Each structure stands twice: as structure tokens, then as C-alpha cells.
Length: 427
Image (tube, rainbow, N blue to C red):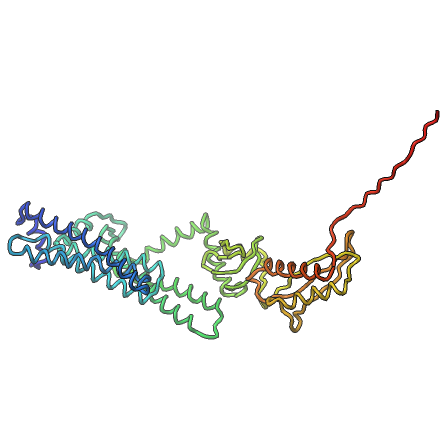
């Protein structure tokens, strides 16, 4: 026995007249158009009145549109109920209700799992699969569609594979992946609140647990739809051949990523130089490490490069970094006064350290062709802020102080002497 909902499509095909179908289609199209325009206007008005709702713009649109469309179609159905057979509207109303319920559920899931992009993509796929299945159910087409998909099949050994089995596997795996990602998000949130754990170890645990949960979810999902997981051994063999032939670099990068996270030689926030690139480590992912240079550019380094190349970690055990500022004064200038001015200017800069072993020094390094060579050495504790702006500030301050005190900064000069000789000629 079929439920009333399952017979809606049959009534629509056999009982409705052409005029009634046109009227119902016009109601649906008009309701959708009005809802679309009204949603845009209502959302714009809400955002202008309540600035705090701007972050919820997508969720508001996702709820207002089907809600308003459902309201308009339901009103039209009640108005036309006494004069027409409304089988098409009777199909559209439960579809809109289902769409509204699914979107509410996805918004709640989004709130529970955070703003992870992967969950959003998988969640969107679940919405369409669930809504399509519900639409086939209420129209009575679900058994027919299932039989059609099951008829397209092939047999491999003792296993029979069909499009229906493939669709069921995709649906179950999608649910398993979403649940695995949600669990990993919950575990990640708890680990991030854990005090006293090294950030690199915490990041390694998060990535390992996420990968393990995804694998376990897929392994559990496949037998649930009748797929023998022993056939994965064939896939494992093919994957091994692929790794040996062309994917070894990718596998090496993934393994290198876990090694970096576990040995904690490079951590987020470190200032490193590798392969001629200098910058701050922003992210350590399973395949690559994101390095942000001081000029704002982002460098993607394969993890294998960090394992096989020499890495200069400027903040591995300590963050203090020394800088040097070379300078030259003329031979006629007071060298002790120049050294005192340079020292005082450096220690007055807010970024320069002047404590314990991190002191400012001004040393004479040699005698040049045009003047006396000096160098100012000091330490800073924030290498991520760069040294160019610091050196520029100190140079400008030294220039002003030298001009005030009469200390000359020499420049190349050549003295050319012209000697005039007289030639006498014998007559």
C-alpha cells in the first residue's frame, strides 16, 4: 500500500488538466521570483539595521528564501484549493519543508563544527543527496529509480557491483567523512585548550587523529553497504606501484611533514632561512610548509625540502638576533665621540636590547681609503619584524647627530694636481 505522498505524482499525471498545471506552475514561478527579490531586500535591510548580523549573511539567506517561498506557495494553495486540483503544489510544499529542515540542520552542524571549508563542502553534498532522496520518495519514484540503478551492474568474481551500490556507498561514506571531520574538530578544540603541550606536538596529534578518523570512517562505511573491504588490497597494491613510480615525491612530503611536527625542529612562528628564502613559519601542513616573507609574500615549501636541505632557524632555542650597521667617519673627526653617539642612539631605540649579554657594541674594524671604518652591533628579540626598518631608523638618527656635532661622513675624493711646464726652444 502506498502512502498519499507516494501517489501525488500519479495524481498529477493522470488527474490534472493542462490549465490547472499552468496555473500551479505560474504560482510556483511567481512565488520563487517574489521570494528571491524579497529575500535580497530583507537581508539588505537587516544588515543595514543590525551590523552584528553581517557574519550570518549566508545563513540568513539560506533560511529566508525557502521559508518565504513555502509561505507564498502555501497561501496560494489554500486560496485555490476549492476550485482546482492542486497535485503539483501538494508536491512542492513538502519539498520546500524538507529543504528548510535540511538547511536548518546544516546550519546547526556548521555551528557545532566551526567554519572548516571541508565540512561545508561535504555538508552541501549531503543536503542535495537527502533532498533528492526525499523528492523521489514523495513522488513515488524511489523504488523505480532504485531498481533502474540496480539493473546497471557488473560481476567481478563473487562480487556484484551496481550504480545503486555505488550511490549508497558514496552516501554512507559522505556521512562517515562528515562525522569523522566533526569528531576531529571536537578533539582539535580540546587539544588547543590543553596547557603545557608543545604546539608542534599538538599539531602533529591533530593531523594524525584527523587522518586516522577519516580512514576508520571509510573502513566502517564500506561494509555497511555490503562492500567487502578485502578488495581494498587490490587498491593498496595499485597505490604501492603508484608510489614507487610517480607518487614517491608526494608520499615523501607527507612523511616529512609528520617528521617535522614530531621532532619539533621547526615550529609555527620560527624565523628560518631555507633554500635562499627567509621568513616566518605560518603553517606546517601535511604536504607543505607555508613561509611568509618580510615583504608579505607567501612561500610554499615542500616538506621534503625542509628535511633534505640545510635550514637556518633564527629562533630555534632563542629569538634574539644580532644586527650590524657599518659606518665610516673621516680621519679628522673625533672617533670616541662618534662611538659614544652611535652607542647612545642604538640603546635608545625601543627594539634594541641592552641587558645581560645582549649589549650594544661599537667597534673599529679598519682604516679605509677615505675614512675610519666602524661597525655598530646590537641585538633584537623580534626578528619577525625585520631589520631594514630598524637599520634605517638608526642610520637617520646617526646622520642627524653627526651633522649636529660636526662629525664628517666621508665620501670618495680624488685630488688632481696639474703641473704646467715651460718648453724652451732653441733658435
